[in-house]
Picture 1 (cartoon, rainbow, N blue to C red):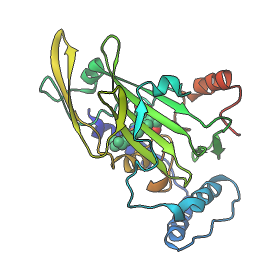
Picture 2 (spheres, rainbow, N blue to C red):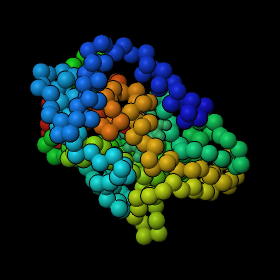
Picture 3 (cartoon, rainbow, N blue to C red):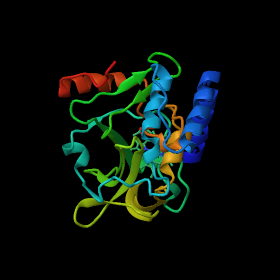
Picture 4 (tube, rainbow, N blue to C red):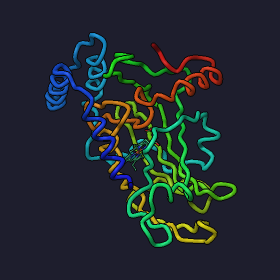
Length: 273
Ligand code: HEC
């Protein structure tokens, strides 16, 4: 099953989660406030409304027309994950997102076949000394607020020896509260450049004892945020502009090991509460 199938599964899971009348009202209030010029922030009384209040504080600064990559560097080092203070975290299961129109040796591959030629991993970097705030911890509406400057990345590597990096997807929380999204591609100088318009790529890979072509469209650089809001299995974003991590949040039950690793390496807990 391809990415669309996974997305459908995630969406179904998302819709199964009960949304209270209170939450619906908060969402309506959010939309109304976003429409109002110079929208005042709601008084915080803890929990979900505090989260919404945080979004409202930053809402007037959104500029919907700018590309969602705005705020990210034009180039990054190929060793960003290893050298940049990122810690590995386990992704969510059943969510390989390869890109569109994938062909392996001329045929549309299954997820299992793609996994024979392409691997992925993840990393997160919190700004030094900063922590994640949890709202409504332990409830079905648990929601995490990440500090400004938080970065997460998703790397794709061909299964060669050693592995060949072919793409880094990066998201970073901006001072306005919105997340910037970018796809980075290898270039001749050994660094990775930020993709501006959707590109296709053909790679030579060893598969079933032969060298074959792997062709795929990279994801559309403007498709990220909507997908992360709609299909996120881990965080319930009230609206698209503030949608952030998709696999890193309260719904990812494997992050306990990450938190221990963080504590051991950085000397403090990644969670404020
Ligand atoms: C089809 C829906 C979809 C689209 C489109 C999409 N993503 Fe994702 N993204 C996901 C899912 C699902 C995960 C979690 C996958 C995992 O854990 O391996 C994810 C994970 C990530 C991660 C790892 C951190 C995290 O959020 O868990 C990054 C970084 C990321 N995506 C960036 C991007 C960028 C940049 C784009 C736009 C080019 C993009 N994504 C487009 C669904 C999508």
